[in-house]
Length: 122
Image (cartoon, rainbow, N blue to C red; front, side, top):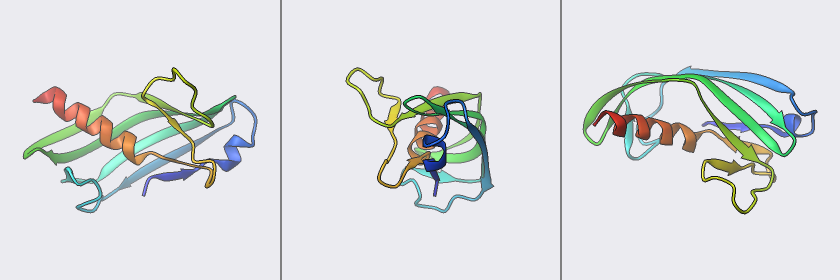
């Protein structure tokens, strides 16, 4: 659902960028541990790096149920990096680009950020 093609960016110049926004419902079961009570809304800027892709979220908003509690999510801007090839010593929050399909999956990052926000409010 949140797999983004980045082949054109990978083959482009460093600093090339695109914008992407999403606003819509997320069906029950997309994440087995999170239930969306309102539409998920987010916007990202996607930029080419020498060795990958950098994504900056300008916002991410929704209301979810997590561990039986209702949580309103309204995240401050955050970012993530995807690399063509991971290197030993790369931080855990750097992911690898699927070079076979030349895509990145935003789904795991969205899930992680929502769970971290929910856990901060418990």
